[in-house]
Length: 185
Image (cartoon, rainbow, N blue to C red; front, side):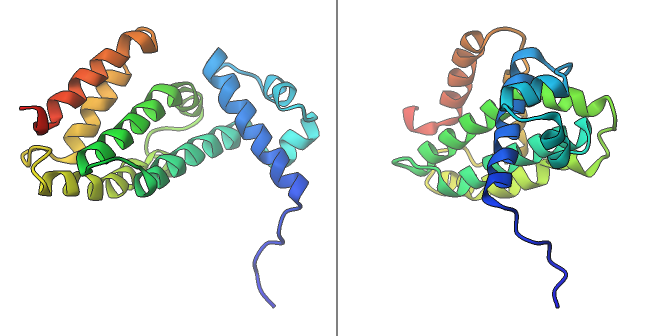
């Protein structure tokens, strides 16, 4: 006899994903004050289905954050590009998108917890995922060897947090990433 949970039905898996997708869009559009009722409406599920999947708002927000971190970390292993530097830059742009769009979710989580909560301990996972990309780009001399991934992620995060529209921040990110790439110098 095993202690593993029974597999979810296919429709239950689809409902959970629809809820996560709708919640991600709703929080991005209206911020951390988005209601559970609005999430259910956008997901086209009843409140019972929503609460069967996520017993609380906090649980939904945690799932959103973990889901996004998983996607960013997985992207590091599958990112494409013509050179190590191109692959690193593509992943850093994905990381930038994550930082720029996760703010409403994080703000909602902070209402009910603090930064010591394990759900916020994602930096180590990001560093582990991105380090092989940076190491490869530094080994070819495409990225300066005197930078570490902590510094680069801090740079990208700082740009993502600048007030303004995505159109305002994008050229700043482009300039910063171009400055990291030594191939043009």
